[in-house]
Length: 366
Image (cartoon, rainbow, N blue to C red; front, side, top):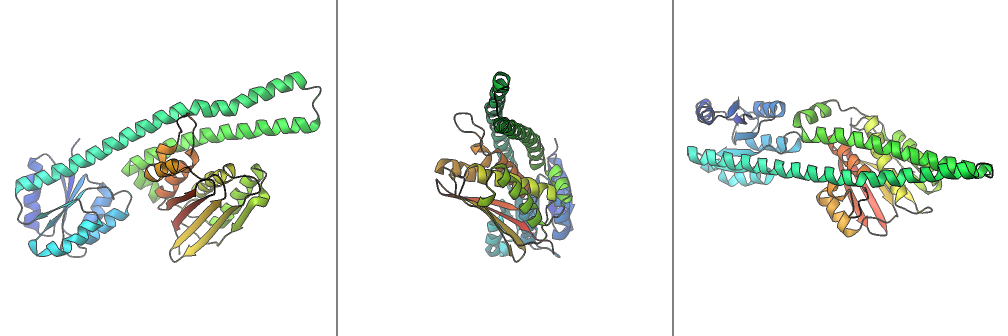
C-alpha cells in the first residue's frame, strides 16, 4: 500500500523540489500552499505523515498542528516541522503541541528521508501494538462470555425445574417471584447480546479513521435531562431502589444523539446500582460550565480496587475480565467509546469500598 505524505509549504520551488524527491522514493504526495489549505486536505484525505513549514500565510504551522491534535481523526498523524534557524526559539511551542520532529533548513535529503522513515516506523509499531491489544481483548472477551451467559442461563433451568416439580403447590406470590427472575435474566441476556453487537460496531469505527469521520459527521443533538430522568428512574425501578435515586439536573442541548446518550446513561446508571447497596444514594448531577455540559454519576458502592482502577486508567479494555474469567466493565467500555466518538470525555474517580464518581463532559449547542 502506497504511503501518502502531505506537504504544506508556501514556497512553490521548495514544495516542488520536495515533491520530486519524495516521489522518487515511491511516496504519494499531496500538496498545499498554506496552512489553511493543508489542514483541510489533512482532514479530508488523512495522510500517513505531514511535512509542514512553520511560517506561512493565513495559518501558520503551529495553528495547523493545534487543529490536527484536537481532531480525533487527525490527532495521531505524524508531523515534521520544516523550519529556519531564526525560528528555533519559538519551535519549542510547536514541540509542546505534539510535533514529532523538526528539520532546520537547509537540510539534506538523507536527513529528510531518515526522519520520515523513523516517524513512519514508529507509527507502524504503535499500530501493531494496538492490533495486538485488540487481539488480546478479543481473547479475553471470548473466554469470559461463556461464563457470563452460564451465570444468566443456569438460574432459568433451575426455575423451569422448580415449576415442573412444584407447580401445583406454588402460591401466586411465589409464581410472581419466579416470573420476575425469568424476566430479569432474559433482559440481561438480551442486553449482553445487544452490547456485543454494539461493541463490534464501535470498535470498527474507532479503529478506522474514515469510518470515524463519517460517524462523527452525522452527530445529532439532544436535551439530556429528560433522557437522564427516564433512564435512571427505570434502572432504579429495576433494582427496586427508586428511593435511593437523587437527580439534580440543569437542562440544555448537547452535541450527541438521544439514542447514544440513552445508552451511555443506561450503562453507567446500571453500574451505579449494581455495585452499590440498597439504601445508599445514587446521585446524578449535571452542571453547565461555559461551553461545556458536565455530568456526574455518583454512588457509594464498592468502587474499583486500586489495581483494576489503574488498569482502567491506562487501558479500559484491559479491565474487562478478571483472572477467574468474569466479564466485568463491558458496559463501561461501551459508554467510554460512545462518549469519546461523540467528542466528549469520560473520567472515573474511585475510592475502594467507599465511592465511585463517573464524570462526563460534552460540548454545548448554542
